[in-house]
Amino acid sequence: MKKATFKTNINCGGCISTVTPFLDDAKSVKTWSVDTDSKHKILTVEGAELDKNEVISLVQSAGFEIKERKGLFSF
Image (cartoon, rainbow, N blue to C red):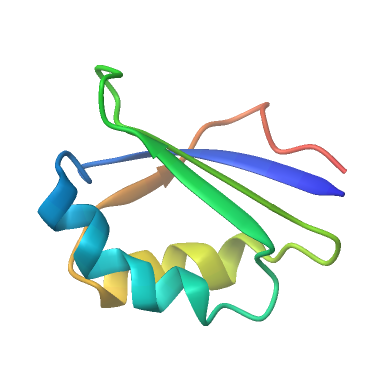
């Protein structure tokens, strides 16, 4: 399973509700979560064939900022 973490501005339950349909429909994402208590609002995604570019595109399409946390994308 591949895992990636991203810094976002997804900061509340309403934001999570907005991004949920985008990430739930992602072909490469099996599970995801956002740590809204974190200063950097960390989005963690996992999937066997995880495509970080798909994740970035979907989160941006939902209207949020997202930036890959360098060095933490693992295969």
